[in-house]
Image: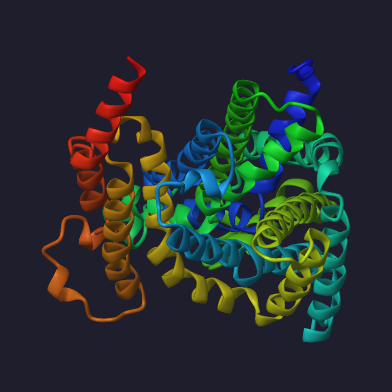
Length: 442
């Protein structure tokens, strides 16, 4: 059986993954962070790229190495615990936060500027139409590669490329001094800003869609699947990095025309109009609608695929359920949705990072079940402290923890636990069983 993809299919696979990732948060957060970072934009951008590009890349590679989806990624965790964590992740990137946000940003930046008196009614109608279209594309799971990778993404990428080139050719202002935490803690602030993209969660879910897309092209050999998934991951990561760099620079040079704006979408909108005139709004509308639509398709499809594996309800039925809930939640409003999501991200993002890191060193862990239990629990406990701090709960008693002031109290304990688990031996009973098996084979 032929286990090779044409080069066009490899690029289409990478573009599809890039389009899945490039959604609402990826567009609205970098411009504001760049503006606030000012002269510290480089350090802030490095921190942001760490969590918004580096961690999702590692997440996809982890999926590729285990050769499957969430079940294989968490095979060393108790099944109930793995299922609970997965359900929480899918709810966050699906109907609770990330997917509805794509519809909200699409409305705020794609339609609202053209309405003289926008109202809740406009948002409701738009969200219904937007998610109905997303459900239509997600309906045929096996055709995602051809529809998104070969049709929608090239148009999206061309629009972003034009915008990126113009940002560097014709910046709209001088870079000024950094503000707030960006002045004193630029890297860590950018690192935490990267949480808002939710792409580390998404990488653990989108990996399954990439594997399904490969199967639709008759690529089933594990080594071939691993290779092509990693190729796609690097193509997507490269595209995301280029977009973020240009958007950060856009924000950093936006003070001449967009000073004082507290919304990345508004900064981007003003900047594009300054670059391209009134017609620029149509360019931006095309970019935003395609970016948000492709991401919502991927999120709905990933959620429907997972929930259908847990329940007797079919994939297509779950597409309808998830899409309908997304349309409903989208009516909450963008600012409220972002505010609600922050504590949840602080609590669960470190858990996703811990699972990715454990998977990357899994072959070096003698006692894998113990390692996964200890590290995941430890990361969650310390992450809850950071989440409580984000909710303005008094947790000053934990001020002695390293990186507490940076909102990353979980990091050193988690890394130390992973390092320690490399030296924890196998249970004695398991060693005896392995020894007896070796003697029997001899």
